[in-house]
Image (cartoon, rainbow over all chains, first blue to last red; front, side):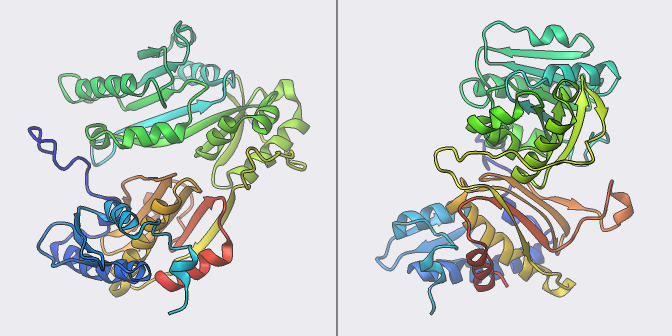
Length: 97
Length: 325
């Protein structure tokens, strides 16, 4: 943590564990994007990650967009955009198609 | 009890919890008398303004008393300030003099809420790690407390290790039934018995659990096993990403229902020990691949235990099928 500005506020999000080499980290980001979108799609949202910009970019069909640093903030922002929690156990997430 | 220093330099914090009068100080006093925890800094939190517990703990080398405010809510800023001071001292001239910290909570504290507060502090998140949550349950009054007090249940649910205190006065039948009640509430925790801090064997015949009436209509907490699969080295990233993405969404949406998650998962960085209390996931620890280097039995790789309420087992399995597998 930078002692002057206090950033980042917490040591990496737990979902970023599991990859130690730069190549693994990049692989993890891209595979994760697909997994994130599989769930977000059910709520009409989409995330984008170009592999360079830190964090993910979240888009709603109405044009709203938000940059989020980690998955925790992603689910919070997505719940705001969708107007309901992004619950993987909800009927909406598990609906066919 | 964790002894060896951690490779990441963080100090292990043992949280000692339990309901009012459960016997926390008595248990701790015996551990200190036996010379255990001699190199730990002891923090005692009391909800009342007048501290007395520290008088019981003469054996402690270093002790800090935080009186007047339970550390899981009102007293949290005071606790964080005290922990920061200890961490600062432990990295300065006095480096290496303490092996860890032990926090004796007030009887009103929810260890889960306190762990969440500590994990949210940007300084302490790097300096401390909650190594273990011990919860004492009074054998005499435990059943009544569990029946009536949501707090007593929250404490038991948050425990890694449950110690039943005052077994001699309660008798083996009560202790056995209490043990089986506790096991039903928190199947992941280990349960032991201690009289005045001295370990005693668990009764062999445990008997039926006590009936716990629903509080505010909360459904019972149940444990769910989820096979997240054994994957080969080439697929480790896929498996971990699917699990961490799905689990982070689940905890975000249902953090109040999913009380605890535990498991060991294969990732490209090695085996990760994953555990959470409510919404707070501990930074995953990398386990050595050599099982003989670990204390106790080898972990079961590829199985996650979810402990929570309001979850339908079939829906959970289906959701993992759709988004994880």
